[in-house]
Length: 336
Ligand SMILES: Cc1cc2nc3c(=O)[nH]c(=O)nc-3n(C[C@H](O)[C@H](O)[C@H](O)COP(=O)(O)O)c2cc1C
Image 1: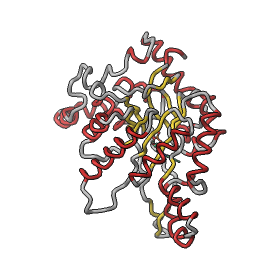
Image 2: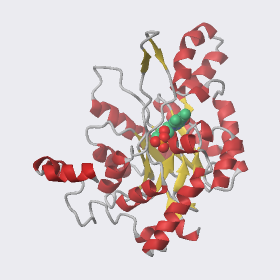
Image 3: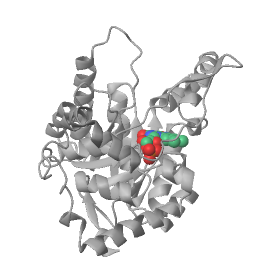
């Protein structure tokens, strides 16, 4: 599949479909299965600050505190239950040795010094790249957005200084202006932007009147935000855009590349449709390219970005206003 080759953060990928961080990328067996199915690269499940702190607590034998912390930690992502950072680092090294495709480690720290320390330690495992998972849901009513953004930009700058492998940041869409945040991070030399992460939301069982943590996946058609921001950023930043969240099919991947993405990350579709489905996504992309006469992804990347789209209103709210002012368009869409 030569025509699908691409370069993401300076890494050569045989194709643009990356298996995103999840429990599917937290063991060698499934990572090998992802490689076999054709994944262009894999992002290993994140090393979390909680794992690091847990090890510290264990070392200090503060097991009483551990009892209180543990339930909170394991509800974030179920697969962090046992592994501490040392175990994680060892297994990341094993993963890099087990497959031939690029392996990207992922880090979700809290303290500024932990970000830098573990970015360096992850680099030493031999991974090809790193993803900083800026997954943090605000819980403090007094903290202003600008200070959170400043801190994230400072962390990215520190990490840039500390490591030589390429790194991306994975962001949530919940900034007042994600474009500004991305362009600030771009100025600090971040190599890629994974847009976006999906937050796990709290869920309540009304019969038991208690919180529960079901595995919530994205749904087909949820790629709208990824597409929008790929389209708005294309041509405006130096780093690569990796569209993520709600990309289920080869056609979804084609859409985000037309908007301007360099590559895509997929997770939910692999849970719902199983790992071998990735092969059919690649076949869809190749089939579509052959039909359109495209020999390489570059031939159509960004063709429908804001910068290049023939419809200059496509990324504005004019589309929405047009629908409101012309009800016959709505009727036509409903009957289509
Ligand atoms: C079970 C599960 C575990 C996940 N673990 C991680 C993780 O360790 N690090 C991370 O950055 N994202 C993690 N994610 C988020 C995914 O990488 C991805 O950003 C999100 O599911 C949206 O993509 P999708 O719509 O293709 O699923 C996880 C998602 C799921 C469903």
